[in-house]
Image 1: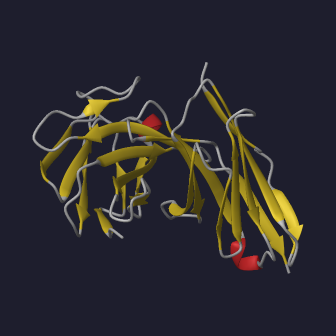
Image 2 (image 1 turned 135 degrees about the horizontal axis):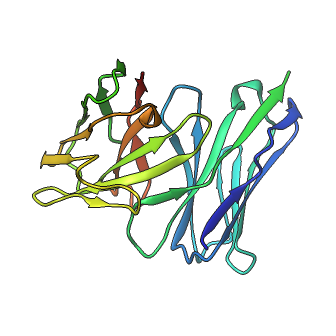
Length: 112
Length: 116
């Protein structure tokens, strides 16, 4: 069966450290994978998209890697700040439908 | 980037009634989607709202329960029919913005529905 798995346990880190979140998928062949941030009571906000032929993508303090052999994406936030505290969702598009399938999300808590 | 508004932002409804949620986009978009997010869960796609034709529903969702309208390229509605407490969720619409060459989706703020 198809699955998108993210760490269900909250990730707690100290301010200034690098947060690394994992997204694993099975039985999908995505053309791209996306990461979103969701704050309580709000809709998800797009952060980064990485295509199947890209290994790495960066945007300011954010970095995403995509390994289609391992079927895994890693999402890094460097120099983390308390304002980065939120739930981070990975999502992918399968079979070109352009609708997204979301993982369950990982809650990140950055301690000052 | 597209700006999306939803109405109502929240509602409390009685079992057996129906609620229609509106989604308005500030620009014309081809693809609009409706998602549900149950408490503590991730987002689940309900359907793709197609302009000028019937919506495309995902497995487990049917038109009689979740009728969708898409009268033009900036507006869509989702109705939650004959509600039960299990329908208590946040309902989100999203659109795909290809303007930047990406397939990113923009989400509305959501409608928080509580069914008593």
